[in-house]
Every structure is written in C-alpha cells, then in structure tokens.
Image (cartoon, rainbow over all chains, first blue to last red; front, side, top):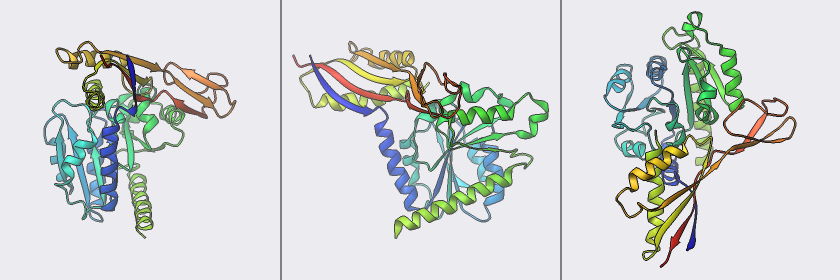
Length: 226
Length: 115
C-alpha cells in the first residue's frame, strides 16, 4: 500500500474559476455582489428598490439564480436591469463555473455593478466563491432572530449583513440588538444594515454604502492599472 | 444538500490523481472536513456511496477526519475547541475571539495498492 499526497481544497477547481471571474470583473471595472439568503427574505425586492434608486445614474446587471422559472429576472428587468437568469434545475447553489458560463452574454464593459442573486438557501451557497467583491447575507425579521447561530457559516463569511423587512418589527418578536450581537460574535468585521425595501426606511444608507464601495473599487482599479 | 456536488468535485481530483497511477488500485481517500465547513460528514459519505455504486471506486473507503472548531480568545488569550459554532470564549465569555480551524474542506491523500 502506498500513500499519494494531494493536500488540496476539494473546491479548488471552483476557486480557480472564481479567480478568473474576479479578474474579468476587475478588468471591466465592476463592483460585484453575491447576495445570499433563505427563500423569501427579500433579495429580489431589495434589488427592485435598489434599481429604482440607482438605475438612472449607473448601469446595473443582475445574474439571477433559481431552481426554475424566469420570474425574478422579469421582476428586475421591469426596474431597469439587464441580466441573465440561471436555472440550476434542483441545484442548491450557484458555482463559479455557472457564472463564467453566462459572462459572455453580458455587456460587462458598459456596466458599473453586478448583483448576483444566489439560490435561496442559507447553507450551500456560502461554500462557493463566485468571484464577487462582496458576499452579503440577508435576514428578514419574519424569519426570526435565532438564525445567525443556527446558520453560522454564512454569517461568519459575509462582509455585509442586511436585516430586511424592519417595517414588520412592531408585529414580531424579533430582537434586532441580539441579532446584531450574534452576527458580530461570528464575524466581528461584518457590517450590518437594517432596512425595509418596501417602505424605504434605511434604503438611503444602503444606497450610500453601494456608492462608497463603487468609488473605492474604482480607485483601487485605477491604482492597479497605473 | 450540496454534498453531492462536493463529492463530485472531490472525485474529479481523485480521478486526475489516479490517472498518474494507471496500474494502481485506489483503496482509501482521506479528507479533512471542518465542523464549520457547511458539509455534513454523514451526508458526504452517503453521497459517495451513491455516486460510486457500481463503478470502479465502489469498494473504496472514504476516511473523513472530522475537525472541530478551534480558536483563541483575544481577551484571556486561552485556546478553545468547540464541537459547533458558539457564542464567545468558553473560559471568560468574551466575544473577541478568532477561529483558526474547523472550516476545512480538503482532500489530504490517497492510499493506493500498486499491485
């Protein structure tokens, strides 16, 4: 019996494609978000409200990941986004290869931001790097305040956590301070925003956050290009 | 349930490696899977059985080294180990902690019989 050393990450092939995607996005000067949450936490509604506020000043692309249907793509198109729908046909997450497979069909050079809306799932997508700049997680107040510790990986990984549907707080037993504390224990550097995409509360802060990060990305890209 | 696709990625690495040893028989695959990796060892073993059933790797044993979450408290400077993610340092309760293992999703080595 002999031993053959490998010492590799199981997802090294995915990570390699993610690095290529990141390079493609960087060359086109794009800021890219990977949005992860459970189904129904408001990813598409947040995109619609974001498009309503930003589509006039910048070009936004959306890559939609769902098991089936073009419903989400139809919704964001109606709010000014171009993009593409990926149907995973049962798959519980998007992979870097699925993203690279659709990049040729998108006008990347003309765009400023890409939002990748991952398949609704708090577990699997957190393992797959897609080549994004910002991995963000949404948690809606209706899901309950116990979720960060129940699904710790994504909160450990995310750079930004957004608590959505805060307009429902008066009707729910949702301890927003506890959620903030638990997220920060899992991930001290995680930024946390609170908003209602439907009613507008907190949206200005989110929009400013995007503008600031786009500026930072452009400054970093032009510094790297010099 | 992404263990099937994790298993497929793992087998792609195994097949590439075995192509360099065309006359050998694969006996065991050794993995490091962290408790915080989002991959469940039991489901991964089941996925492996399903995928390899009836094929050349049907008799191959998957050996999973289950790695607990370990870290260090920045406040009391003690090292700690968790079975699962938990809130703060088990000694002093501080939330100022750093995690340094338990997120692994690695293929370590193969055992082959060169006949």
